Length: 463
Image (cartoon, rainbow, N blue to C red; front, side, top):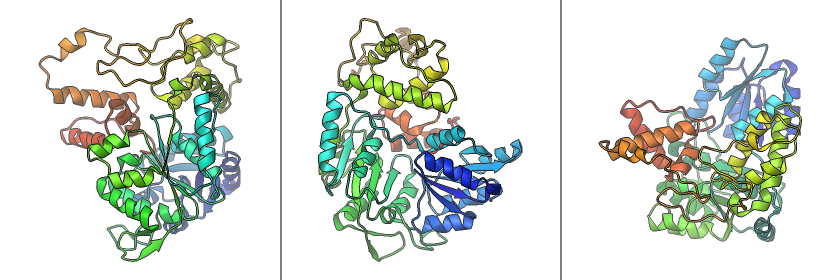
């Protein structure tokens, strides 16, 4: 993770930077927002910016938007009053961190904003086979397509491949194609020239140039608009890009890793994804198994997350009880490793015994388990009637269908989308995955509802 710190922070800059470095971050310091913007325009990218509250945060955020630079901003300050912190959030900061810096608070905020975790646990035989394949292809220059359900660890695998490649000492640049609005994504990829659009006050280098010599991860590439897919195909084939507003080609040397939680072959058949781009990306395919397909990894992953969040919350580390492990192994884990992580975060806070007890493992409504149940079987094709692979019927109230009589399909669809988004705390990507639609379709629906006067849940941090 790459952290940009902006401002002086009254001497605490070195302490904050040191904490971030200890957490594995690459840290860059800029004196003010002008210097920070200059660095970003010249390809010195960052995954998150921590900005002194005395800086003009609103101007910084607005300039990032105007110049189509996607960068989460965290405000921080020394002895700041509540009004200043609130104002920073209102001006566009995602979080506020008080200083002097608290190591666990900074670590938690950075993790929340970037959602980055590079730990690879692979004890199960099916996952060990994937690791063996990754080890074989990592030293090559082959383009890799990593597929698997949401939450299976595709970005972690991408970093693993980069770290075992000949490019490991160069940049690893990750770009989430689903999280960045369509009108910003082209500039993020290819950069732009001064004056190429309103707000382009200077030349800006894109991710291809930033990653030159290293690896570029195109996360959830299936969500990219068709017009941009054509430009991406040319960049991969020709190994050169053209910045927005320029006619001059720029040579780039990058290895491409792409990920998708969708069946790209089906997307190609539906005309949603270019066939030629699919074949260009799919030189090597690594399919990551769902968590329910690798039951021997559930316990070590759960213990890892329990230790991680015990440390983050300042509580004593606890081992999992055998009954708690059995409960975890018997659940279907629709959200995979991401869902397991959230469950263990809750468990370490709820546990009241010396070892994490089954009652502290709070599964989503409808999740069932039994002391005598065996680990969940590998994933099956979703049942249209709504029965999960754990055998739990999604339709728990038979009268619910009758209650829909007299309502239009559009009304029912709207309520389902809004309720799912609310359940996901505004996270568009997770909501789209649960609903089985693309992030682009979800955004179009939300824009339609907003125009109709419907109250839309606020977007989650970083989206």
